[in-house]
Image: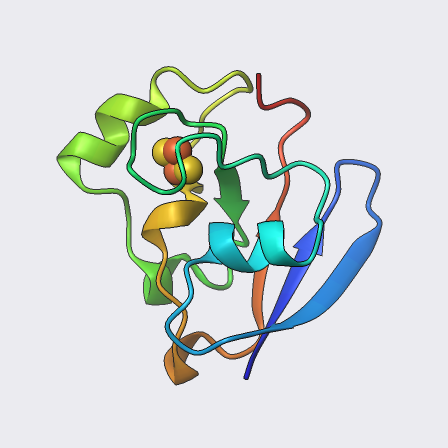
Length: 107
Ligand code: FES
């Protein structure tokens, strides 16, 4: 299991145990995390899984691919250099303890 913490815009943090190999979006949806919708199911077609990777983790998650960056342009909330589509972040032991911040809005 991979521990992931989601921090809401109001600062409330929720920590879950995700399956190794799940995407961050799949883990969020499976645990009813408010703020991650995942409308397209991870096909990189919606941007409703936008999240901000905590600055301490961006080096390990890496940045968005060119296609992902293009889709992020359609995100409802402000996009910055921590922005990722959470369906494109695959969880594994190297991301144990990952912290992501949720945007103000997704749609
Ligand atoms: S779930 Fe649609 S782009 Fe991530």
